[in-house]
Length: 213
Image 1 (cartoon, rainbow, N blue to C red):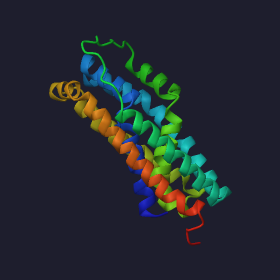
Image 2: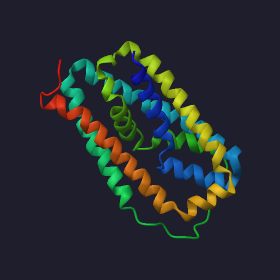
Image 3: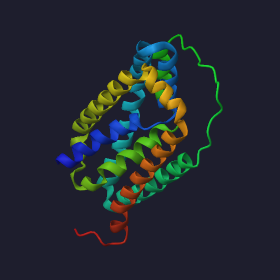
């Protein structure tokens, strides 16, 4: 178990939560309309989905590594292209209409739970993000390291959730986001494309036979 692998799992979990997406925007709306407590309940429910998709992603990544490096590199290549695609879409995103009413959520925990486990983008985004950030430590990935990786990922999720809960109720943050939504979404797209470049950087040498044994 290497420090870079642990750091990669922590950072992947952290950014998986913090990078703006459907759940991030839903949380922002709940926090803006109902305060931090409702936002915290939503995040607590959504954490179940985060752990589910992270577990499946790590199992897939470790399984690919166990089968062979070629499968792992091919997986990294596909995930790199996927990250580039969603990043490009974010960069090209059109601004949303102004004046949309906030929806009041009566049971934010249940909404977060359902949102987290039914989000169709949860698994591919988790797979792509974790692959991009742990591919550099592929040799250390084994099934016996899975519990530790999940524990580190859980810590990353908790830290990210605490950051979000701290900021979502602030009026300044809410006004800033509304005023700069397009820029924030585009910057997140650029970040996704950076992850894509990293995934491709690690995967391509193995597929071309350039990586040393």
